[in-house]
Length: 455
Image (cartoon, rainbow, N blue to C red):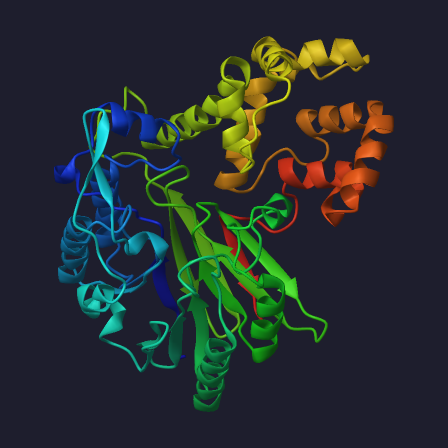
């Protein structure tokens, strides 16, 4: 590696070609419960690409998957036109594809129903994106669509695909693991710096993300250990639309960092700029899209994305109060009907007006005056959003952290019962205060701006 190498990392662009149909009752129903914007994707991507083009010193752009909304052929054509604009502006672009990029029966929106549109097969992606990594590489694996690209003298990118069995397995099978090891060994033999990108996170974005099956790569524990012991120290991921930086050190003393980036078209709408300062130093800075050409109801870009995100979470909370059956469908794959819908609705309605101060009075806890009037509902929504935006602020010593831990301490008998019952199924719940603390405050590795020191 002869000199510092900068590059941009964006992901989960989910471009949707609005000419297919992006309005009406069916669209609004879909949009209301989605973190990412859909009709707005073209305007957001244009604004983001203008930012990239404005940086004349950074030539490389990496995009690890979910390029379009849901495999629409016309969306791919429209997104590629935008990539070609970047390319004509002097950028070199490397992509991988993922599950949202191929689909046999995608739909657009018209009136109160969805309409079928032309889809894209997985095999067609190789031709569509031949100018953006698939046709310009050192090594290509035709079985998985993984490849190795030379980014600069002495620097290699392992662009890995984790589509797996195209169903439930999203990860690397043994054959691909051996292919990856070969590429790492070849890079080492050449004396090259190397890192990887893949769509699914290799490490959970937060302790809570250990639980959803689709939040992290299949067999992530074994895979992350083996990759670290192979010598891979840095991997860039997406999929979860979260801003996180996580690390794992194996028993052999090898550390791997997973830098997950939030969706470009939903809160937090992040662009990462990464600079490989030298073989061991990685500087990461993150920016957000502050404006784009859309009716944002007088809000900035950041405010608009947060409003969209909060609306999605509030819809879940509101359904608890006003539609218990829908609430259960949203939070669980269990389709059984609620046994006590009236009780769920009663609890949901009480939550609508419950403040931090009221909880304090009920439990004989005195919260800090700065948070007394905050609705518990609003605080809960903010805590969830903070997890996706990264750098969760409610660390030890802040009023919120102090109050939440006091509540758990006051409810200690109930907490102990839950720890005993739930901890058997999931070790995360064996210490509920520690688990909750990890969700609301991030006091260790920064998620947005960081300097990583590799070994």
